[in-house]
Amino acid sequence: MSNVLPLPLARTPAQIGFDRAELARILDLYGRMVAAGLWRDYAIDLGREAAAFSAFRRAAERPEYRIEKRPALRNRQGMWALIGEGGAVLRRGHELGPVLAPVERKLMKLVQD
Figure 1 (cartoon, helix red, strand yellow):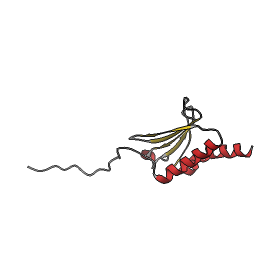
Figure 2 (figure 1 turned 90 degrees about the vertical axis):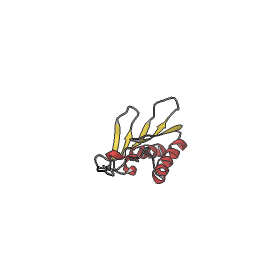
Figure 3 (figure 1 turned 180 degrees about the vertical axis):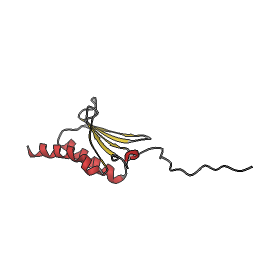
């Protein structure tokens, strides 16, 4: 009788999360938006397929922006996505900086006025 051993497949982690540098970049932007008076609350959702950071104008509303990290899309469209209040994908990319650029431009516009 022979023993059948499963092939070692690449296992997906039980939970997707942000690493320290990614979270520092996101929280830096969040802090600047709070200081400008635009955001008041945030939520972090860590799941099996994606990690999401949601920023709220008020706690009782839908998030104004949601920043998602989906490693399954790493080799296709990019694992980072900026999703607007209506659920539309505003920006998608392979790196976090360019995905956050529209929010940072909005902040710069408000500071200049």
